[in-house]
Length: 208
Image (cartoon, rainbow, N blue to C red; front, side, top):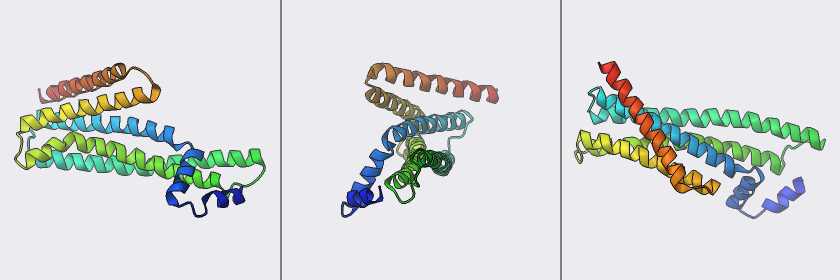
């Protein structure tokens, strides 16, 4: 196995090696799941922050931007570190099971390297996807801060962007599963609308 590993990767370049690891560890399917789940969480979490802040009378864009960026950073760091530790533990367990089945060590083999690569990629996706979604949701408040749009426009634009992100994720899932794009898009849209409605209701209840 070691000889095969050297023959397959020597002189082929870094990206060729990564492509090989990607295929061996089947990174694609898991990375897709983490991307959709965490982008979904990031968008809805930040939607709650925006609605709660705005309906509580907080219209200073600096406050919403600071809260949003801090939340995005926290989700990113939590996602990367948590996913990396969890994935590393799970993949080491699988590698040890493979060693017992093969009756040979897997150190310095393509299997070990591909599992390490998979853990790193999945962790990055897990952390970056919710952070990016969150920043997209609060992006209208950057425009408000620069005096381009009003508070009301920024508020509704954030809701529209959140719903657009959710519909996009639904369409992406539909493409992966070869299912109805409209059905998946509408489902995600309904989730977003229900979430927005609950956030509004809770904010108004606390204010009352």
